[in-house]
Length: 377
Ligand SMILES: [Zn+2]
Image (cartoon, rainbow, N blue to C red; front, side, top):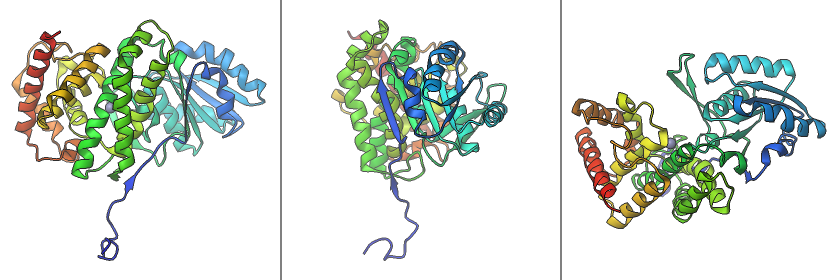
């Protein structure tokens, strides 16, 4: 008897969600007209300062030559409601009917939020590969002072995400590595969430497709991390760099959205309680969360060896000391465990019962394990 027959029509469905288009290649910033023209005839581009000159000049010229209107404005550093309102007003005044974001995560989130409030399509060009934010249906809104304010859950993913490998390979290697750290956890978290039949990022049940995308994400990192780091350290575009960006920008985002998160991101959230770690990148903290998860799962040695090899190859911090932590203060790490196990956090997607004390002990064990691996060559 099916659930519906059993009178259980409310069973949560499984899901796969994704941007409508994901494009990756060299020199795509100057082809913006090709992506914009399918959605409207006047692009409002919000753009990071470092690339403003290039966008106002070369990119805008391409749009104009294609017969499209274009307005370019500089992003004001914070994805706050004030900034979203300011940009929305400017876009309306310009008569724009497509929103484009070019920049880091906050710039892209602002573009997503403006597009959502004005019901316009959105095209995104990430300039750093440090998180999987571009592909997801989520924007993180901050106060004007830069404090976290709220998550804006969007009814759909961005229309187009364009990864220009030439721009992405020119960003600092540390950001690129952080993207690898964030993507490295995707498979393990999706696997846990699938096993527990948990809740994915759009509050549906994880799909087999989501797990498959997450598996491919891990596979691409395993195959390409060595050569991709060679490329990014020398600011070169190679097939290995390109495949790694598919993993870090696309697969990691859609894999997590459909497959779900688990311990690694829950521990990352908890680590916000440690003042020494405030300067640490999201993907770097997720790596430590992943090691904690693998301890809780008592993962096989071969799996740990491979995860640690990728971390070391990417030049990511392995131990807490590598991240700049001076002392492990018990009270602080008890708080980390408490936040990580909070009601509704993704720790609930672990396939086994996990208490705050289990997480606390696993974090210390993960650090001891990391120290041991660090001492090995
Ligand atoms: Zn993440």
